[in-house]
Length: 255
Image 1: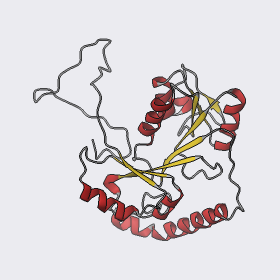
Image 2: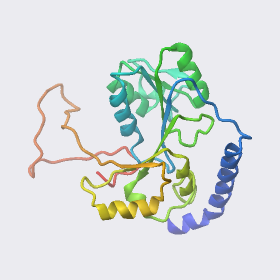
Image 3: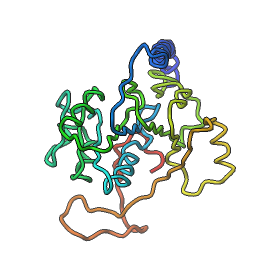
């Protein structure tokens, strides 16, 4: 695998050059970013999957939904539909993608939509729901067609100090320096207790701007749920219980 990655390095160099030029064109205003009259919050990362975007979007939903009318807009990865699609309570993962489906099932009273073109997606949401207060963009850090009012970048604690390369040789969508665009940096999947010394090392690695806020989050598991029987009985975790762990996330290491 290491040799194969080395063979892909020239393609990573070419990819990095394209990404660099694209960002420069946005930075100098040749490529235009759109803004909207209501707050737009972007949650994303610079790596391919595995940083906890969906749990953090759900956290923001819980934080905002009782005071504001909110909508979540995602791409809808591997869905069978195309263009703009507004989720209903009966929508399944094939129509809107698994993560938007999960969000809609957990929060049926908010609006959830999918669209490859985030600008068109927000426009359609505002046309259908002109009283919206906030739009949350899921996995939108690279979607520079929209200028978010608040940009949140997630960085996986377990990968922070590794030497990582750009796609396709590595898993980075953008160079690590792209973190400069974020308003908030969140180091995800940290240990529950993280020492001041370790935080100091993380800050040395991140080198945040003075106006960038840095936060740390860790995984806290909820109660067990019986997926196979319609019962309230929940087994107790002990050494006598046999467990099969099925993981459908990009980076299962913290589990």
